[in-house]
Length: 120
Image 1 (cartoon, rainbow, N blue to C red):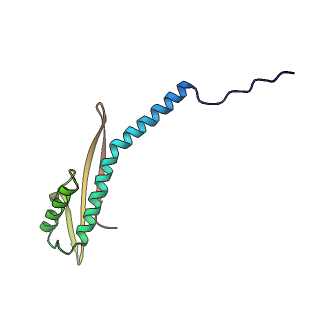
Image 2: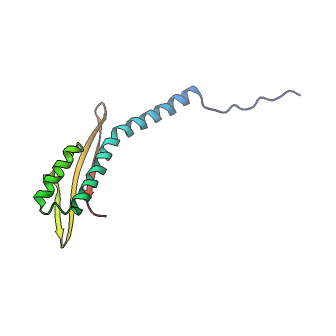
């Protein structure tokens, strides 16, 4: 008796193109969104540092210090005047909420809402 044909397994060329296209789309979206999240984490780091900093005692000094730090780290999403600074006893809490619009391709964009705080 002869050897029977085994059923072929694997990915066809069309399947490979579809999977590759999906991976490229995910990679492009990830590369476009990454700078917005890096900026958010940088803002949050600066808010924590300002809340614990003894040199900034008044809200105006904190806003000016944030503006100086944002120039160094190229933060364009918010400015010092956008900070919400509250003081509870000896604890200072700084918060900022903002939106970031990231163009993806053509007329498609992603709008991300960020809320950075000095707490936690």
